[in-house]
Amino acid sequence: MPRDAGAEFSSVIGESVGMVHAVKMARRVATTELRALLLTGEAGTGKELLARCIHIAGLHPNAPFISISCGSIPAALLELELFGRVPTRGDPGRRLGALELAGRGTVFLDEISELPLELQRQLVQTLEEYTIPRLNGQGDSATVHCRIIAASKVRLDDCVAAGTFRDDLLARIAVLRIELPPLRERDDDARLIADHFLREAARLHNLPRRQLGLDTVSVLREHQWPGNIRELKHVIDRAQASATGALINPQDLLINQRRAGASVIRGATTFGEIRVPTDGKRLRDIEREALDLTLQLTDYNQSAAARILCISRPTLARKLKAYGLDKRNQSRS
Image 1 (cartoon, rainbow, N blue to C red):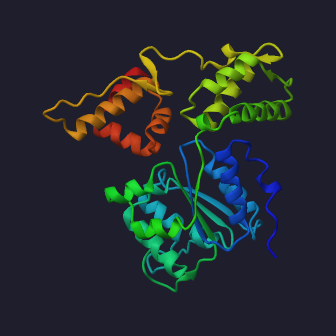
Image 2: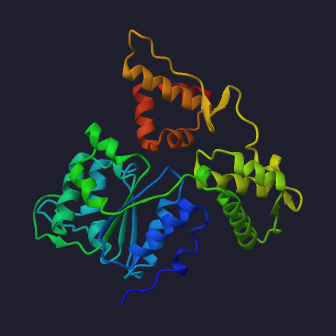
Image 3: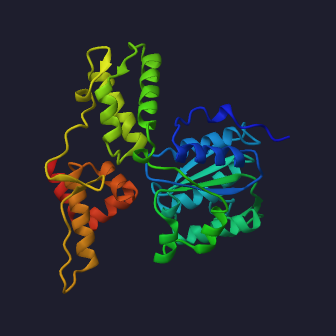
């Protein structure tokens, strides 16, 4: 019998309309037999946390939950991680891939937009037939029983239009889409989540329980949070370590001073300009300027730059190398 998914979602904190709706949809789907769904939202909005909650609230909570970042693993290794391999004369070892290892559990495919096209084709075949295509094309295929939860911080419809993502794969993983709103659009959720982080820090590290000052709450509400909840976690950890009294004050957050050259336009933090003359400009040059400006904005922090540009860290590293910007970054260190 399906179980009522309730307490399993208690780790997802938020009272904003968008987040309440996302959790309501996740609760509904958790106890169904739906085999594939898509979570969308900016980096750091909590897609993996919600996926884990869906798994725990599902029909097989004791089965494995396997998380794979499609943008962080080389293509050949990613194929092996997903689909495994069967013994051959030259390599007698057999390896099970995540889709088989998960059993009736869940495979979470983060950054699915980074999945190479050939692996997209194989995943389509898996979702069509619920069998695993073997790496070397030999041996009996294995039946897939797991649920696949895909996640993307970029619009997959745009990737389809650009030819980097298969429309048939999108159709199969997006039977249900759940959008996680960015933290800047979540009303007072930043305060609620910050309070949670402070309580957890006090409990785990035997620290005094600190409170957020009224001015501090105002700063949390006004900040744009380009790194979303992940950024908020870092900010609160830093504030907890630097605060000396019972209150967390605005100066403890280290986010109330904008970098020189930045400005706010329609509520979004901007930095610099990219100009396109009337006689045209190469897309390659525009992309290089965008990368360079973003590196300056983040003080050459590649992880932060990747989050702002909505690409994976390995993709950013490849682009920096292609444009020679990686050498500039090295010269600063």
